[in-house]
Length: 530
Image 1 (tube, rainbow, N blue to C red):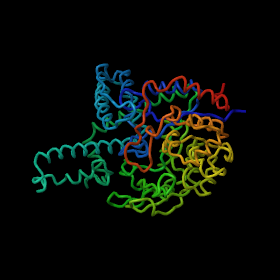
Image 2: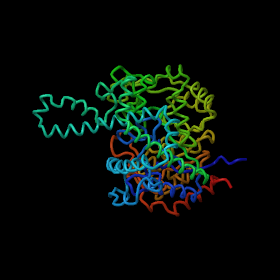
Image 3: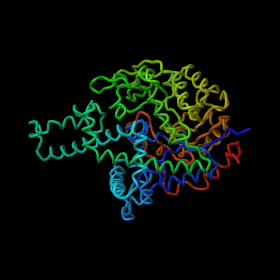
């Protein structure tokens, strides 16, 4: 009988080592795969690969399809002859413990533009043309969106400098009357675009595509290079017996090409503002709920079109990963609808989602779906019934298990079956050491009795507990493996800044950690198949 028990590590590529200020698809990622193999692990779980927008959140991307250019490796570009050794000398100093996004963007954009010029002059264009043709259904809109945003941002910056030179008195006379619009636009959603760009028709789009032709080709090139580098890395991992679990946010960003040019998919007014937005009611993370602000889907439209857009989105995601975790799975059963605008998520109402029909139709088109359901938060019985009917693995978080008695469903002895993925914590949780510092006396007492520990090695105590559970799969955040504290957590829900910045230094991963994971895998029958 095939052993279904397995284990792995949660680490986004941006968190891995690279000398270029952010983890990328270069040597650090390959070394991480080697670490997983040495540690006897068979899973690498990542966060969404999307091109991050305002706030740098992987869950708020400029496109439901495009990937993050910042993850492209300059070293790999150099290996392909698109950059020279001199281009990679004098790398600026970057904080070794966190991603400095704005500095990284500026630095890498300079390198990427040099690579693009070399590509245009010398590279074989045929594979690039094939990539563009096969991905035209999303690539064209995304590249136009990004090119236009960058043009307007540059215009805003130029006019701001000019405004300072002319003085506030002259500005008040209306010399720079567009500046107010551009101030609103900078970092904002497409609803703050100047009027002529807010809702372009066919002729307007054709004009913009011609005017921004060079930039559109540049951003297409970045998506092509990402695909090439990621495909090689994924094959390297798969060849070593390691599956990649990806992550797909159920909602799209209000600041995205999808929302800008395909408003029929959502509930929008004629001025480019959403009528209803997404979030969750008060929960473990926030007393006022979480106001995400994503536009909500017009599910009737999706149903009438046979879920074409969703089929394309899921199919595209599965080109990059082996299994996909759907974030906020519960919204397929019911979702929290908040009237726009709102200050908090408290005042909202539950609405029914598309339910099982959605998955039945998608499976008819794409075949069996390798999906994991993120079924955390405020759940009703119908959500679990839907997950169980679909046979999807759910999630168990050990940090949620203590402090409310022995019947807590997150405690391993209460797992109803084995079709679960158990985590010490997720990207939204504190690290286990950070959680331990903040835990109540009651929680600590229960932990000490439950796993017979004094708490001095709490991160690895929790790792052992996860591996020893009956859940088919155990996945551990990289921070817990490295015994890192709250200063290294990935995200704090409800906090606007300082998130998604965690990364490791060159020598943090070592054989000692690999040996520990391999030992637990062997002890608890999660070792890779012979």
